[in-house]
Length: 220
Ligand SMILES: *Cc1c(COP(=O)(O)O)cnc(C)c1O
Image (cartoon, helix red, strand yellow):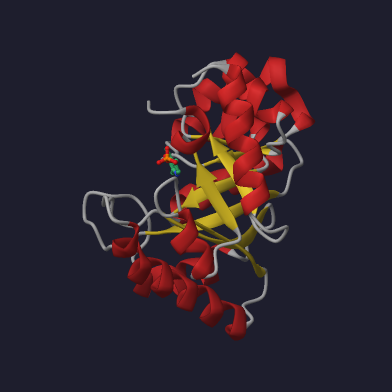
């Protein structure tokens, strides 16, 4: 997509979002030039699915934006990931959290993480099932170099945004429940839900982070 379109798309989205909702530009497969256009139009958070892509884009972009990891994180990529990212949105196991904690400690960093909820209970997908979120948070909130800051969910992919609503509602309930239960070391600040076709529904259901790719950059 050309740069004028990217700038226009970002402007339109930012005008629509209220100040309390943060836009994460999902940049998988996009070029450094495309990403730079989006930043010039006002994007403040980059969402990367692949550690390698982030490392490639980082030198030309740097810390002018915040970096969120939104893909599936393999253990052998954690060392690099904690160097680049400000938030890892996709923690779904004690062992992954333990690795993030360890590698963050070695560079003196406190890593902010979100817990990825597999709200559709889809067996092939990453994320923790809704009924297991609380115990995972209890187990990892004690780790000294991790700060649990909220939840993220994808929900099952569907053409109709209304199909996503029930999954967003359920994730929001878990979010509120954990907030109320006051687990030490768990800070329920961020609820990351909704993509190009579902972000409006997600915001209605309480999202304060939306992750948008196609509506900014066009079809992949
Ligand atoms: C690609 C991606 C998005 C954005 O999807 P679009 O439909 O292009 O807006 C959001 N979240 C995650 C985790 C993604 O991988």
